[in-house]
Length: 367
Image 1: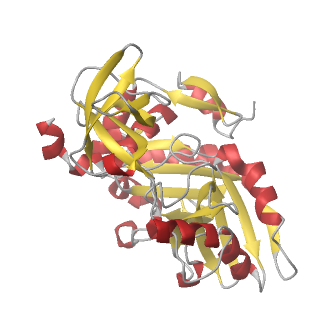
Image 2: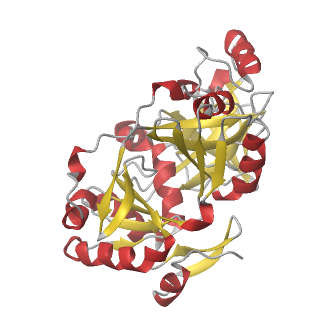
Image 3: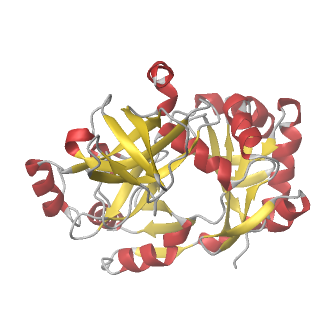
C-alpha cells in the first residue's frame, strides 16, 4: 500500500488504519459518531493527501479542460474553483473532480484517489500541442480542516482573512510559516472549512501547527469513515458508490454542472438524454423502520417490484435516523414517494426526501 507523509502520525495517534484506494489511510481514531459530531459542531482535520492533483498549463490549457469536463471552465477566473465531471462518449462519469484556475493558462485538477491513473490516461489522450500536464499527486499534502470553528482556529496561522474567502474560492499565501499554500473553500462535509494544499515535506509541521492552533476549539483528527457519513448527510456523491461510468450526471442530479453551451466528450449523448428525459434518478431516502440500507440492496415498490438499488446508506449521526441514497425509476424519484429497502429477508419502508438531509429535519421527523 502507498502511504501519505502523515501515515506515521496517524498510527501514533492510534487510528484504525485500512486500505483505501491503494493507500494506508486512517478510517477512525476514536469513534465515527464522535468525529462526525466534532466536525458538525466545532472543527476536525482530515488527511486527504491520497487525492490526485494534475497541473495543466499552456495556451491551450482551457481548451483541454473544456473538452474533458462538463462544467464551463471559461467562467473561472484566478482564485476560483468549480465542481465538475469527466465523462465518456456515452455520457457516463469517468470521475468527478475539482477544477482550480491558478492563473491565466494554468489549472489544477483535483481527482479521486482511486482514479488517479485512470484519469491521467483519460485526459492525456486528448492533450494536443500547447498544453503541458504534470501529475504532482505524490508531491502534495492535502488537509481538509472542516467545521464551523475552522476559520477561528486557523486564523492565527495566516494573515489571510479566512472568513473573507468566498465559497469555491482560494488564495495562495503563507500559512503556518510555509509559503505558497493553497487555502480553498470547496469542502465535502457541509460544515464549512478549508482545504490546505502544500509541499509534502512540510506535512508534520503544518499538521502540528493546525492542532496547536485548534486546541482551544477541541480540534480532532477525523478518519475517512466520518468523512463518508458527513458527505452522505449532505447528499454528496461518492465515486464508485453513487456515480461511476454507468451513471450520467443528469441521472445523478448533476445537471447543474453539465453545461451544454460548449461541446465536451459525451456532449451529444447527454444532450439526447436531456431532451428525452432520464429514466432513473439518484434520490435520498429515510428509513421509517429499523435497519440500515447498504450499497447494492434492492429498492422495491409496494407491490415488491424492483425499482432500483441503494448506492450509499448509514445511520445519520446528526439526525439519528437511517438514511440512504440510491437510483430509482423516475416515477418514484419525487419527495414523499414511498419505497421499500430489501435488507436481507426483510422489506423496510422508506420515504424519499430532498437533498441535503440536514435541511429536511422536519420531513425526517415526520417519517
